[in-house]
Image (cartoon, rainbow, N blue to C red; front, side):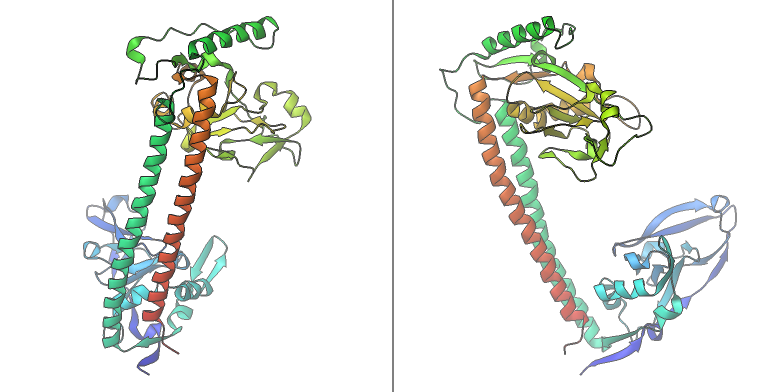
Amino acid sequence: MSWKKVKIGDFLKRSKIPVDIEDNQYYKRVTIRTKHQGVSLRDEIIGKKIGTKKQFILKKGQFVLSKIDARYGAFGIAPNETDGAIITGNFWAYDVDKSIMNIKWFNQYTNSRVFYDLCERASSGITHRKYLNENFFLNHELIIPKIEEQVSHVQFIKSRKELFGYLEYSQSHQLDLLKKLRQQILQDAIQGKLVPQDPNDEPASVLLERIKAEKEKLFREKKIKKEKTLPPIKPEEIPFEIPENWVWCRLGDICTKIGSGSTPKGSNYSIKGYPFFRSQNIHDYGLVYDDIKFISNEVQNQMAGTIVEPSDLLLNITGGSLGRCAYVPNDFVEGNVSQHVCIIRPIFQDNYFIHKVILSPYFQTLVFESTTGAGREGLPKYNLEKFIIPIPSISEQYRIATKTEQLMTLYDELEQSVQQNQKYIQELLQVALKEALEPKS
């Protein structure tokens, strides 16, 4: 057997080259990223802006780790551009005995589950501030191949990573294509290109007149508030051609409600009660009840304008999830939304087509171009209700929604298949790494 047992301290020797930081001199600083993403140059800064005046010098080729984040994979080989950089006592640099250890082999070993477990066991302290115990770490024993075999193992690992890297790129490219195809389907759907036109369909202009009459009736019955008149659509606003039987209208023209929710004062949530949907609960594929909050009957009575109804469309109007939109199922019972979510209530009995419109590249572009505010962007109601959208007949809305769902289901299956292939590739890579980094029994 060509493998032998050594302690980490047999080939890693701590390097402590002290330096006193001078105010008028510039110094390179480094960062060590977690998840084995390596060491890189962070910045170059003048000494007077550096708080810790006693630091250490890092040399290229040294193995360096973070004593705080080693258990999260914060270690690596110092690249050439970090030569001469400064590090604090929280970063430990080591010279490598090249007669015992090939640093590239060891760097690959540090990305193994075994090494992560070692760093976890060697770290102690409070949960969010554990420090690596250097004595424990350096006295840990490894079984390693001879130096000549380490070199060949490194070449083996490199070739396998190149192969699997190509395979991963191929799968990622397929996912990108699927994403683009999804977007094209939605765009084709709202341009009348997804299903054949039926000349027997009622013109959408007649549908729009019925909607107008129904909204006037609801106002007379005091079921909705009087709406301000939206501006007529100008020819230059029309973004693309639609079939002859379709019409353009403003979103507000077909809705009985467009308005955001609100949050209970002092985040007055309950253990149980009415579900309270926040932006993290709103996804394109539907409502997500993970991390759901609840409000009491008393609180809900104070928030009547935020009550969600079946077939509503819930649109995230702020933050990183801006533009996500959920269709509220027809069997939905009760719930409310926060101020970061807008209730869009088209007058149609079935709003699946309008949901596809909102998810389309065209509408999403309007959303992101119409946000206001610094830092936490938001989409105002007065912008949203003026968005112009294409409307087909009810019959065609149903046909388009049905076809779109069929295609989306197919693409979901393809996406899952590609993601499963990515998982297999990672598993195969781990098998290859294990073969090169662990002795054969």
